[in-house]
Amino acid sequence: MEQLFGARIRHPTNPEGNEKGHFPSWLRTPLPKGENLYQTDNIIHEHRLHTVCEEAKCPNRLECFSKKTATYLILGNQCTRACGFCEIGFSKAPPPPDPHEPKRVAESSKALGLKHVVITMVARDDLPDGGAYHLVQVIKAVRKEIDGVTIEVLTSDFAGNFEALDGVIDESPEIYNYNIETTRRLTPTVRHKATYDRTLKILSHIKKRNRSRFVKSGLMVGFGESVDEVCETISDLHDAGVDIITIGQYLRPSKNKLQVKEFVPPERYKAFEEYGRSIGVLHVYAGPFVRSSYNADLVIKRTEDEFSATR
Image (cartoon, rainbow, N blue to C red; front, side):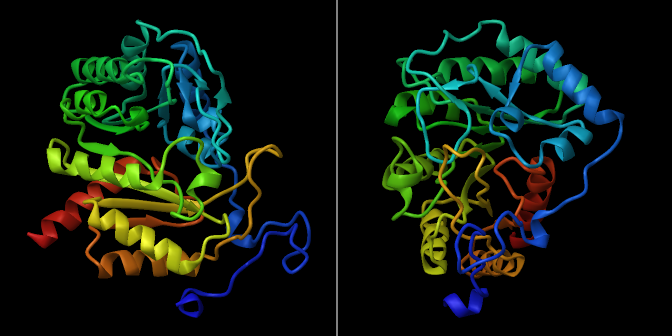
């Protein structure tokens, strides 16, 4: 199967691969221009909010900000976990949730003109409910502020607290996203506390509750996983009831994080998309710059179209 998905492109620090310091051509994009970029940045900071775009050093930040969209990061910008891939700050005891944050997220979303609002969160293992109640308040505030808005949440696993999980599920976000991040073999290296099997159990539970229009999950490639391992993960997610799968290139955000082992070529992402469709996944969105919430408003529209086509 490996040969069917294209040749492996090694990381430039690997002597078998490219010249050191050079990214392949498909990882180079022009810088976006326009006033929207600065307007988005000003609105976010005027409302004293965090975005995963900035805190996680997302390569799509400028592009998304230029389209007046962003992914909110609630419950602060300090996570109680230290995953090997993530640049978000770490703290064993972050500040308590800000009771005014839900209102500020809602007002900021309205100022940006968002019709599809994506809300993610840091893991808050210091809180009894992992921050679930606070997330619910954000969802309520956004819906109160914006008529006809659709909500996408990207949550933690709430440390396996299914009562807390159910509290968020009961709010019926249109898309419920919880990322598996990587393959089974690499999970202990890539993730700090979450496990592969518990992730599948959580996704299956979300699907069985049937309160969200679509269930979504995503993973990164470039950690040294094999094609077979990625396909196994796609299959496992499908079996768990996941409707939307995102797959993107892992890019090392700083020297303290896991090294990139491979730059995955564009044609392999297309093959992953085709494999997902062949086994019945409703929508697979894969590419070098794809991230969990990248083009989220377009993804929900495409998934709706694909869902309608299967009826």
